Amino acid sequence: MKRIFHVADTHIGYSAYRKMDVATGLNQREVDTYEAFTQFVDFALKAKPDAVIHAGDLFDSVRPTNRAISFVLNQLIRLSAAGIPFVAISGNHETPRLKETGSVLSLFEHIPDVHVVYEPFHKTVALDGITVHAVPHCDDIEAEKNKLTPNNAGFNIALLHASVPGAGQPTFLMGEFNEQIVGIADLTDFDYIALGHFHGYTKVKANAYYAGSTERFSFNEVNDTKGFLEVNLREDREGEVIFHPLKVRAMTDLVPVVCSTLNAQELGTVIKQRIQECNPQDKVVRLKVQDIPTPMYHSLDFDALKQLTKSAVHFEMKYEFRLDSELLYAEQPAFHSLHTEFEKFIGQYTIGTQVDKEKLKALGMKYMREWENEEERD
Image (cartoon, rainbow, N blue to C red; front, side):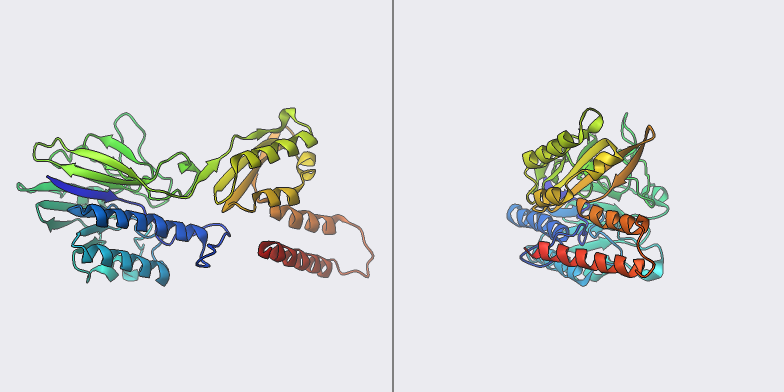
């Protein structure tokens, strides 16, 4: 028997929102990706699998920061020092459109037991009793996949980063402009097919799985449990796949508030109740406010809502406005509304010709930014 750990879509270096980590001063969501991958490596060092395979998008971008590169380097050195082979393919996020740009994965080729595949063609990586047939993200991924030929000895694993058609399901797409689609129905002689790109942990067929991402990166993933897969390969091909969850940042999409039956006072009360009931501290939260008339929107106490949500890593208020029997969609954090209303007020209000409106507007915006900065420090 051989045991491998299948992980994917760690997106190291990802950052979002304004919240900073108190301990490091870094973007909180960037730190979250580091902590999730560290959890995984800690688990691997204790369990000592025969190999770790990463199915693409180790990094979130083609040109990650030096900080992100240094973090990954340290984690791979930990695995290497423990004698645990690590095989990774490039995903669509870290594959440059121009070949001369080069791949960040090439920086890790010198580390013992680390195998990175990023050139636009398949490559075979031979480990002890395991052969990994790796196909990185590339323009002609179907043709490269068709070249895979399993060995007669040991276990054969196909490693791909792409969307695949599921049995009786839609293709596992992420809605990204450069994602590739590849068929896997013809990979019948492989003991296991390790997939990356789709962020939800999914069994595609008996021996083909998406490990999913190690963190939540959008509200489309709000209900996903994040983690990695332990794959136990047996010669009788009756292996088992075990999902191991990781502890990650809480993300919540609250039940929407529908305004059609509420007056202005009731709306403010219901929104505050939704916020308080979810306990937003340290969470990423979204609340949709639907069918809201413009006058009712202007009646909201945005300062009070900001105070209620400031403990969250991110709290997104998504308003769907009712306008002449049509809905106008707008995503805007509460603290932006004061700026917007001030600019509108200055533009519409009649004042003496001796007053420079642009100068007055700039001065007012300056004072509001200073006030916000003081609030953040408090």
